[in-house]
Amino acid sequence: MTGTEQTFKDLLETLGKNAKMAARALAVASSEAKNLALVKAADALRRRQKQIRSANAKDMELAKDKGLTEALLDRLLLDEDRVEAMAQGLEEIANLDDPVGTITSEWDRPNGLVIQRKRVPLGVIGIIYESRPNVTADAGALCLKAGNAAILRGGSESFHSSAAILDCLLEGLRAAGLPENAIQRIPTTDRAAVGEMLKLVDYIDVIVPRGGKSLVERVTNESKIPLFKHLEGICHTYVAEDADPDMAKNIVLNAKMRRTGICGSTETLLVDRAVAAQILPAILNGLIDAGCEVRGDLPTQALDPRVVAATEDDWKTEYLDAIISVKTVAGIDEAIDHIATHGSSHTEAIITENAVLAETFLNRVDSAIVMVNASTQYADGGEFGMGAEIGISTGKLHARGPVGVEQLTSSKYLVRGTGQCRP
Image 1: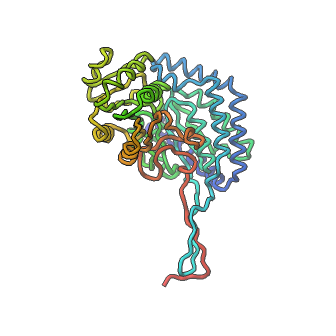
Image 2: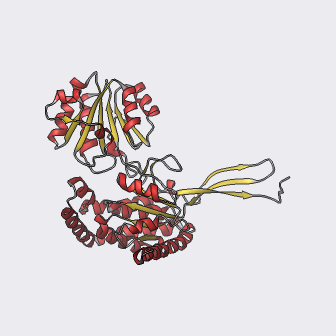
Image 3: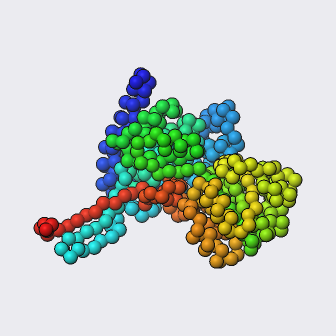
């Protein structure tokens, strides 16, 4: 082991030990203390907005020098509204019901035993994410509300922004008398630190990778700790034969172009071949006029000369940019088959006026989030009324879809007897 590797190993073990100790205190912390920490952190975000935006400006300058795309720069940017949104997000989380200690079920056995199932924190959660600095606030706050300690490893692009945001969270913890080690950040951008983090089986209970395909693949391959997988968002919108044309145009434009760099952005548009000639030209015109590059199959290219030819790789690409792939399909069966073959099980939507078709889509599409007549950009814990999210889990174990405070808990069984011995 090199000196650098030993340094990272020691650093991560220290963070892990500190987090484990903090988690024990958080597990029995009162709702009032946790909520106070969140409210005070929100106050700090507003009060320190100038420092946060100054740190973000430094990150933005470095990111531009690296040649990041406009969509990725948008993910990184913190303006006044986004800092305020972070503060409001913390307050919304504070207002949520505390899941910890909730008795979710209770029953009596014939032998007189009384059994309860109770929500408890997971323990220590490691979050590895890329350029979005608001994840620092969201993840730290959600873990705290659910009684978990957090170890955060943000991307190098948001290094300074995340540090400034973390200072606000720590101010909240101090004000509430909670351990500052409840929310820690790995203070280096060196990728080797991630490798050491993924070995901390004695200290971290679950890892949440939140980022692009290469990040998730690396974490999946290297982690010795269970994962909440947040895979890439290859999201689809399917315009069915009886879709309202105006609704289809508006939803598709929003689903792709509102913010192209988020995981809920539609990457592939599927259109029923029977109505493509009637509905698709207006959709294509709206997208292209908004600055979106359209890559389509032959029928789509025939409708607009500005459409470039799609390749097989386009159907399985998360662009995170102003690019969309468009394919015409022969009905709902082909649409669902395409999603099953090329999708990432994140979010899919159908636009239809047919209630039976809508229910068919809802029931047969196997993704974490399935929508009817709504933009895929609503794939967000905050929009679901969960305050915020730590990510969209595309796996099927423990949690699926937006991971909020409830999903960051586990359960234990409380058994009360009166002297029973098993025969």
